[in-house]
Length: 304
Image (cartoon, rainbow, N blue to C red; front, side, top):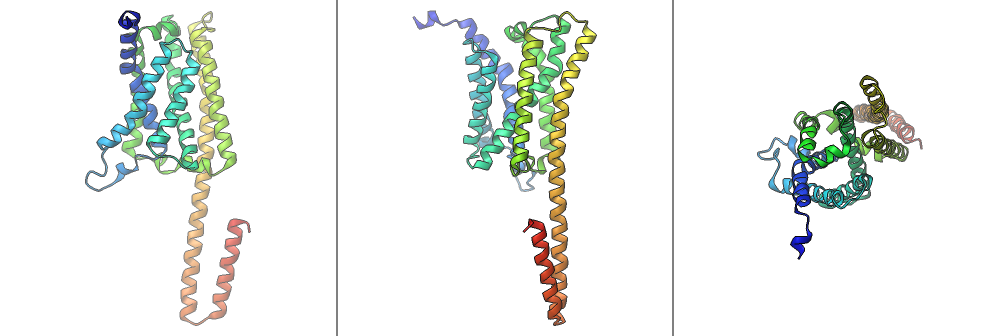
C-alpha cells in the first residue's frame, strides 16, 4: 500500500522545513525582487486605502513563495544536490514573478531576471556572513544543520531579522533606492547589462563554490578559530566590494543622466522665455537666432 511506502518522518520533516525555513526565506526573496521592480510604489499613495496591501497583493506574493518553498523541499528530500536546487529555485521564482506580475515585455523580463538574481545573491551573502563562523565555532557540519529542523530554525533567526529589517526599511522609509529606477538604468545600457550580469553570476558561482569548500568540506578546519574568522571576512570583502562598485557605477550614471536632464530643462525654459520676449517685441531676427541655438543644443544632446 502507498501509505506503507511513504516515509512519514521525512514528510513531516519536509513540511516543518517548508513552514519554518523555506517560506520565510522565500517571502524575503519575492518581496525584495518586487521592491527592485518597484511593485510597491502604491504604498506612497495618499489616497484612502491606497497605501495598504490588498488581499489580492498578498495572494499574488504567496503564489511564487509557496510554489518555490514546496518545490525546493521536494527536490532536497529526493536527494537532488544543493546547486541544482538553487538554480531551479532561481528559475522558478523568476518565471512565476514574470507570469503573476505580468512582466511580459522584454524590458520587464530583463528587469525581473536581474532583480531575482540580485535577491538570491543578497540572501547567500547574508547566510555566509555568519553561518560559516557558526559552523566552525560549534564544530558542526552543514549536514548537521540541514538535518535538524530545530537547529536550522534557531540559526536562521538572525538572518530573518536582517532580511525583514531590510524590507521594512525600504518600504517604510521609501528611500532613494526605490526611486532611482535602478534596474532601468542597468537595462538601458547593453554594456552595463553585460557587466551587471557577469558580476552577479560570478559572485554566485564564487559563493556556491566557497560554501561547498567552507561549509561542507570544512577546508579551514585545521586552522585556529581567529584565522578562520579572518579568512571568512576576507572572502566576504571581495564580493561586497565589487557589488558596491557596481551599484556606485549605476548611481553615478543615473545622477549624470538626471543632471543632464536638469540642464536641458533649464535651457529649454530659458529659450522659451526668450522666444516669448522676442515675439512680444517683434524681434524676428532674435527669434531665428534662438531657434538656431535650440537646434544646435539638440544636435549636441543626441550627437547628431
